[in-house]
Structure formats: C-alpha cells, structure tokens
Length: 392
Ligand code: ADP
Image (cartoon, rainbow, N blue to C red; front, side, top):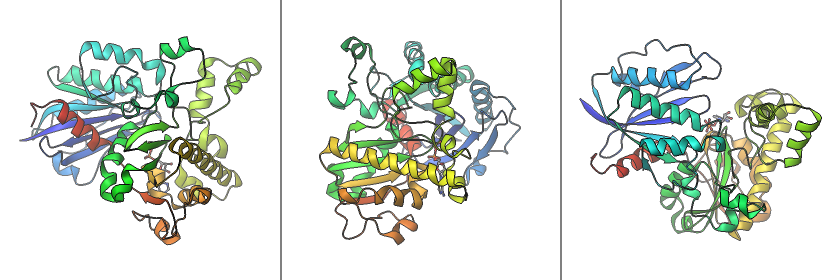
C-alpha cells in the first residue's frame, strides 16, 4: 500500500486532484472533473495514472461541487492500494489573516467562509471540497494554501486603494491572486535565470484567469489583481480593470440586478465577450472572424500596458516570465505582447518563441524572457507536507 498526500484544486468549473508521495513529493497520480457548470461533468485521469486506479467509474451527472467532491473522495477511498496521510487545498482567498499554509479547524473554516464575498466564484468550491473530505474522512488532516499569501508582504502603496481610510481598515485593499503559481515560479527561477532571478522580474500568469506579478528578490511587490479576482488583465470571461462608472451605468440605465452585473463582468466579458465566439485562445487563434482577432489584440494590448505599469513599480525590468495555459503555449499572444514591450528592452527570438522554448529572448534583448510551465499542485503538496512535520 502506498502512502499519499491528496491535493485538491477546486476551480469555478473543475476539480483537479493529485496524489503525491509524502517524503519527496513525487507525483503519483492525477485527474480532474471538468465541465462542472455545464451540468455534464467529465472525469479524466492523467498520464500513467490509470495504473493507480481500478477503472474510471460512473460519475454522477450533478452540478454541485460538494456532491462531486464526495463522489471523488469515495472513489479514491475505494482504491485499496492508497493510504491518504493528509489533504492539501488551493484556496483563493486568505484575507488579511492567512499568509501561511494553515491546518484546517472549525474556526479556520468559519473565517474562510466569511471571505466568500471576496471571491464568490472560487471560495465556496474550496470550502465544499474541505467539507466533503471531512465528511468522508473526519480524521484526515487538511491544510489550506492561499493564492493571496504570496502577495501579503507587498508595500502599503501597492495594497491601498485611494478610498476612505475606514474602508481600507475594514479590509478593502488589493490582495492579489495566483500566488501559488507565482511562488512556484519564484522557487525555480534561480535555476533558470541565475542571479537575475533576484532582480526586477515580472511573471505573466496567463490562463483562463490572468494576472501579472512584479517581484524583487523573488518576493511580490505589486500585482494586477486587486480586491477580487476580477481586476487587472483581460481574461477568458472576466473583464479585468474597468471604470467603476460602468457598474453604475449598468445598474441605473439597464436596470439589471447586482447579480446580473456580476454575471456580465465575471462570465460574459473578456475574450468571450469581445469575440462573441469563445473564451478559449486556441479557438480564437483558429477563427477567421475579425472579432476573434480583435479579442486577441485587446488581450495582448492590456497585458503589455500592465507590463509597463509593473515595470514602473519595479523601476525597470530584468526578467519577464510567461506561464499558465496561454503563457506556456500561445506563441502568438507572447509575440503580440512582447512587440509592445520593445521600449523596455524586450526583444524575442521568433523561432525560439514559435517552438515554446525555455528562453525566448534574443541576444540583443536587455530583458531575459522565459516560458516556464507552472505547477501549483506541487507547491500545495510541499506546503502541506511542510505544515505537517509528522507526515514524512
Ligand atoms: P486555468 O486558469 O483554468 O487553469 P489554463 O492555465 O489551463 O487555465 O489556461 C487555459 C487557456 O490556455 C485557454 O485560453 C486555452 O485556450 C489556452 N491554451 C491551452 N493550450 C493552448 C495552446 N496549445 N495554444 C494556445 N492556447 C492554449
């Protein structure tokens, strides 16, 4: 029987899981339930994971993250060769209280539930997974790892909005997200970029959700996501930064409810809203429609403008890293973004970019540009192991 740490990454439409060995955090198995919001969830096992499981089983056709998490736990529980030692979760919002991986207690769950209004599309799903695991294995230790934690040391000036101080004191501040991805990149960057890793670095996490993080000494000093995961870059379905006046306009003139405004900005905007075709960059790249090209152009324009803003926060730029689905795979988007950053000293080697090579900057570029696959799951596995020293 193999001992394992279970990793849960519950997103808005998917539940990804992985099993890691407790000693050296080797990946043992992984899988995902996807298309949850469509009401027809699909269960897949990745890589050579099938060796660990006795077949895929019948997944319930339900839209609830909780029901699917319980099903998944029972499925893993039914595999006689696996003994779970602990579970680690990605949790999007840790508020101002949680800046370290934290053992789950009733009190912690209560506090995380209170942060739900800060991340309405993500927090409830992580909480559902925690509850489902507790239901199936009440004694299993669970650890929560936060997307906000990596940014918790940012200077005040990067955290604060220009709003009345009482609101700032209440917690209406910029938190920043995708911290597990940024932490992973910060950890591996010295082996890739050498001494420049500790210099002025921007990491572009470009997936369905997208943000930039400015790092000095491999610590976050600014990021484009703010109070919620809606701010900053244009995303798959989210609008990114928008004049708050648009919200007043929608409420007053369109007379739609707050929930409907939220739906427009979180789920009907971004690449999907601008193209009217898809939120998926692959589909937009293949499309001949002018709206598809406009959506990709706007995505790249917004990212390049924000790279300028992050460079200001850093007072310069030594290293630019692309990561996550779009950042790792779309040579077109990387080219469109970097073309607009030539004034910063960015110049890419077109064939290296087309081949998705690790280093894509040219010899004449004063900024080193890299493509580094992110790995949020191993970050959670290591953090969970380190938070529970009795494990190994
Ligand atoms: P999430 O935020 O859901 O984890 P991902 O990091 O998986 O998202 O990124 C999803 C995005 O990556 C989608 O827009 C998808 O089209 C894009 N993507 C994935 N593979 C490719 C590829 N080969 N070429 C271009 N875009 C890709």
